[in-house]
Image (cartoon, rainbow, N blue to C red; front, side, top):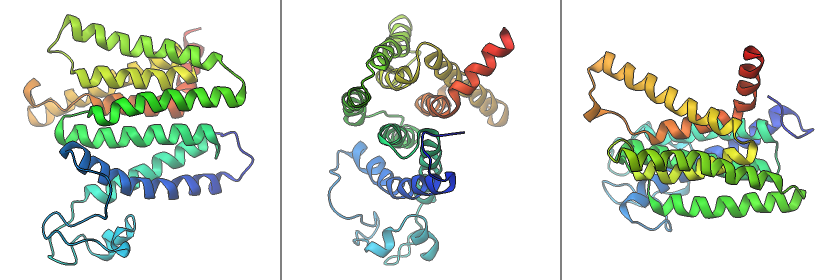
Length: 266
């Protein structure tokens, strides 16, 4: 994987990972508060004893290890989801930094991936993709991508972003209209965001790769759950995380996968 930067890859990945750990910690706050209609201001507190956490207790991953996974005040076990989200975000943003470099495009797509982490956590825990996150992500995404195009003087990517939005979002909207029980409107709304960001990188190719990977990952996981635990359609996992996963893989390696497929089929 190569990025548009002359800096050493280890340094680039390290900066991305560092920022990812910090943003991963914030992702845990957002994913906990937004679904409950809470504000994002104020320091974190223990949900059991309501004790305000100190700065030392908010250091990503290290605080969890130092506290041995328990609240210093009441001893309540801290869910492992917190350090896992921080680590996952750190890894993903390191990969994004390697993919794009430490530049504005890397910043925009790093923010996009962070939003997908937050939505994945919320959807897994609550089967919900909040409008409070999806709508601002759509608007801010278009503003950021338009800014990139203006800075670089390249407007064609905005046209392919619109094409990607129409393909990804339009397909899911059509499915929802034909089979209302087959897909949630939250998935439809986020599909327009995913199509925009994938389309900016290349449409229709990368958009179709992202859609294919989402269905592939969702299908394999659903089959695995049924074989492993006898899961039924009523206990199926939400589809949002697979949309996010397919999109992230495509952002990072989609062009490689697309070139490999076209090369093998030619």
